Structures are given as structure tokens and as C-alpha cells.
Image 1 (cartoon, one colour):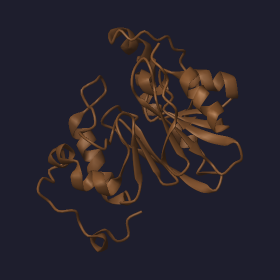
Image 2: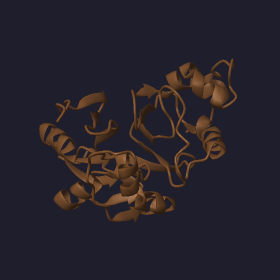
Image 3: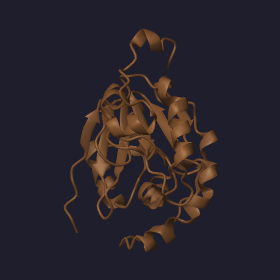
Image 4: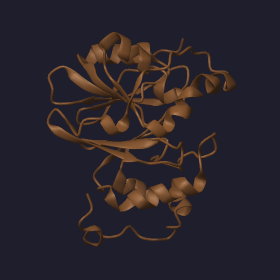
Length: 236
């Protein structure tokens, strides 16, 4: 088995673990509650993620899955069973979750997963510890894809990447829905928010909206300068 990388601190109180077997990002987020964290998108390396938790001295209080594909939910049942943490997934992704094992086989990924027992994303708490939690329904990659804002982090799954365009070619994905979703959320994302995607590097949203040329072309913003902050007044 490939050597498991150490958790990488990508922002204050936010650590990234790159899953073995199938490379996707899992995030561990400090909550302000002593010894407790949020776990976002536990993928195909629950053992490696759990090792990172031990190193950091943290236990998951909640598990959030941005969508139902195997590389974002594959380890969720492990953490439910070990820590009793509820797992949140948007109800529109129940079919996506149900197909996760089939997709694993179709991709010929050597990983065995149990399906987690999920709680609807709408039942997630509005705050955890000392900061608010905001769920942004973001269909397009899948019907129930969500982006999760917590602290300075925007956990964007496969909807918004630092480089390139979110995926929309798998079953349940729709290119035009993804485009409409991003356009509807674009001006509500603060420039200083740290975009933490399901694959690839993390970047402040200012860098994404000014430097991600494939994404800007996809959204019809090619050649447009970044709007000044006063033009975005009133955005969250």
C-alpha cells in the first residue's frame, strides 16, 4: 500500500488528507470544542484519516459529505461506527449514494465500503463550537451536491475547483445546472474564503475568480477583470 501522507494544514484549523487507493481530499476542521472536529468527505482511506486524527488529537463530532460518490463517502460508515458521529448528506443524493458501490466496481477501485446511515443535510446544526455552519445546495455535479462554509473554509466537493471546472459527466450530473449553480453562488462567496475542493489544491476564492481561466470561460466571464470589492458590497 502507498505510504500515507501526513495531514497538511491548509488554513488555520483546517487539515487536508489525500486518500490512498483513489486520490481525493478529506478535510479535518477544528471546531473550538476541545478535542473535537468536523470531518468533510471521508474517502477511500479511513485508516489513514483516522491516523491523522490521532496525530492531531481530535475526534469527529460530525461527518459531512458534499455528495454521494464513493470517493467522498467511502469512509463515512467507519467513522460512524467508531465515533458515533452523524453523517450528513443532501437528500437529493440518496440515489447517488445507493450507486456508490456500483461506481466503485465500474472504476475497478480495490476498496470495499459500507454505506453510511445518513442524516439529511437540512438537519445539520446552524453552528458548531464558536462559528456558524452554512450549507449551500449546489447541484450540477450530482443532484444533491453541496458546498459547506465553516469558519474560513468553503468545502466545495467536485463543484468548484481551484484549477479547472467541476465535473458534470457522471450519472446525475448536468453541465448547465452546474453553470447555473456557480453563477447563483458566485457573488456570495467572500474573496478571503479558502476554497477546499474534493481534488487538487486549496486556494482563496479571490485567486479562483481571477486566475482559474477554464472556469471563467465555462461561466462566460473570459476576459472580464475581477470586480472591485465595492461592486460586491453586501455579499456574504
